[in-house]
Amino acid sequence: MTSHSEHHEQHEHLPHSSKELGVDLSGIRGYLFDLDGVLTPTASVHMHAWSRLFTPFLEAHGAAPYSDDDYFAYIDGKPRYDGVRSLLESRGIRVPEGEVTDPPSADTVHGLGNRKNDAFNETLAEEGVEAYPASVAFLDAVQAAGCLVAVVSSSKNAPSVLEAAGLAHRFDVVVDGLVAARDGLPGKPEPDTFERAAELLGLPTEACAVVEDAESGVKAGAAGEFGLVIGVDRGVGRAALEELGADVIVDELDELIPLLPDTTTSLDSPREDRP
Ligand SMILES: [Mg+2]
Figure 1 (cartoon, rainbow, N blue to C red):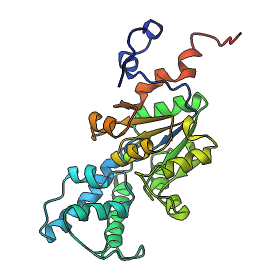
Figure 2: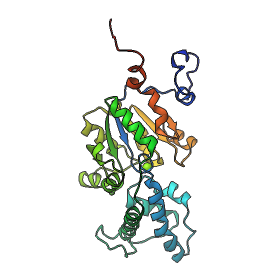
Figure 3: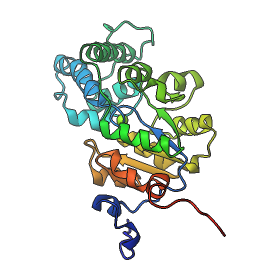
Figure 4: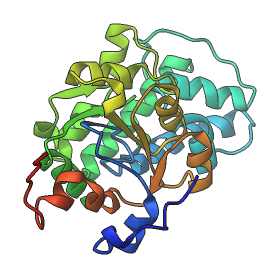
């Protein structure tokens, strides 16, 4: 990454961290947000649910114990059954595929995935979920700047999470696990679900930014022709996110607000675009 620090006198009013980001948001007209870990701290709900599933399961199979590192390496951001397959593969455990309709008690890929989903919904119902304040501030700012927004989530629980977080009314376009399954779209790390969201917003992918916290999601963004891939570091780590293809990495999305073209210019300089 190169830094553009030579001529920063125009940006004296920006916070220090924003100057260092060195990113141009002026061409971005749409933001494609991952949900879990980007808009809502549901990653912790998911991590809890996966742990409740795999801790006893791996113990019963005499395999290496489940840890949060497993979540980041094999599960985070992927469709549910892919996460099950990937984790089992890491331990050399084989179970039948089964069917989507398998009961949560079945020791099949689909049964285990359904068991995890039950654990997730129980936790969500018990504890609720509150959106990250900095992410809501960024969402407010990009919408105020006239940009379009979509949610792109591997989760089939996206609507209930958006509802629980009070964000459902903010998004007309939600490409979640159910939409992907219905339309036969491959999940992250393939770029197809993000591409579909751009299409539904009526924007070329080059005018859209992908906002992701997961390895598979950043890979999906880097695999497409998107205008920008914004990595939010919730635990994957800056170096890893950058290596996977994130163009800019933040701890919180509100760091980007001062860089939005309309919010940085409209307050202090009226627009007079005379030739
Ligand atoms: Mg995520």
